[in-house]
Amino acid sequence: MVSLDLLSSFDGMIWLQSGKKVGEIFEQHQTTISRNKKKCAQIFGIKLQKIGNHWQPKEDSLLLQLERMVHQMARLQGKSSLRLDANRWLDHSLLNPPPSEWIVSSTKNFSDSHSLECLEQRIVDAWLCPLRDLPVEANHLIEIELSSKEDIGVVVLQEYANHQCILNLISMLKQTSSAEQIKQ
Image (cartoon, rainbow, N blue to C red; front, side, top):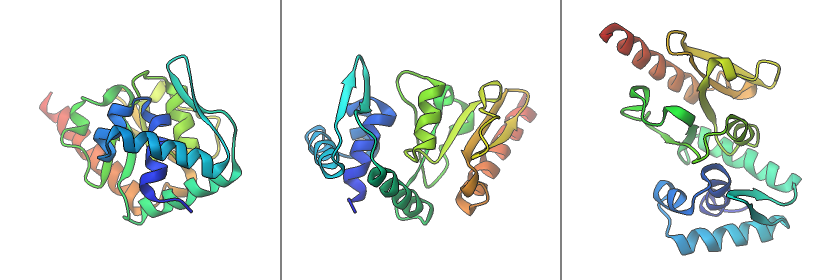
């Protein structure tokens, strides 16, 4: 088992694609991030490589996936902040103020496939995305409409759709969305 900080550095680079962003969000110094991602890759016997402008693991590791499951459960139990990929809505009024107990951020490349991959790999716990882009064919995901007017929804792993942290997030986002619609 690896520490929360170690895996946060490694997965943060995959999710956010920026050491500076990882440092700001997870409150780690650049040298710590670099050291942690190398150590984490070494523990799991894989390499984190940059292809073009995109950080990604070179190999896949069952042990890494199992570790991510453990860390996601720890986040859901309140041992660390949950992660919401806000995609194009990082500066949206839905997230102002951001939900408590959640880290809200987005990768710098705004790719829906990247966000979906981070959700499926348990790097993030929820994904705010356009309703038209929701992967409806994936039976391991649940899509929750927040606002049909703004064409926005949240996608989570089906197994955690009824977890209290997820329900609280959805409730807060729906309330904020309703309040915004009333203002308009």
